[in-house]
Image (cartoon, rainbow, N blue to C red; front, top):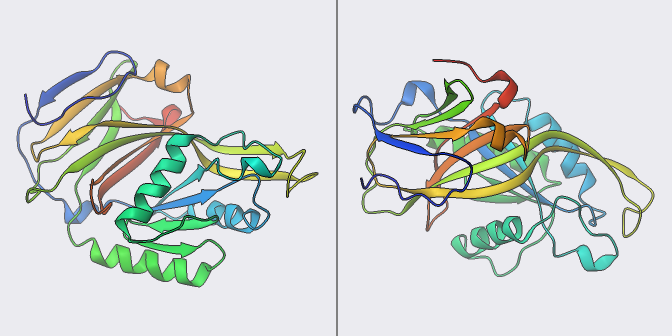
Length: 250
């Protein structure tokens, strides 16, 4: 079976071809994916972290916070940072032709980036990305069987592009007491904090279904997002999110 090459280690995985229905579902647009790259050791990041709290409440936005590790040398090791999240930011820099990475940086729809303090520019980029989503790939998350997360992705045209399916496990909220570094002495709030990033595989245009063990996923984080995006450009084709406690049965 060629429609998905698996790279995931979260429990038992079942993969099946689905009956081809609608390819791209314009009537059920995917949310605009907004990714904040931040750090607990960055004294200019807290306002951007707070702004993400407002973005995650928007119905048309999937807002995620990725903590990077390259400011750890300043005296405080970010408790959520990893090399995987930092590598994701570096990949965006390459696809956008940027020579450096920085915090706070916001990436919108995998297409545009803005400084996290430029709220007006971020809002405009979100509106622009939403308008450009004339066709989005339908992604569905539900409890497909007792204790199983069912990830469904519709069929579509990929035009010889490499398309990657990502699993993002995240927690809706954390408070952290910062004891050293630039934010020493502050208690900071973080929203939709990504705790693990996994490449499920490459999607080849056929409809697909993946089943994962919810108990295993919940041992890592409280919520899940799936993002389907072009591997080279980073452009997001479809996305969806859900908290495990609120998953609906089909």
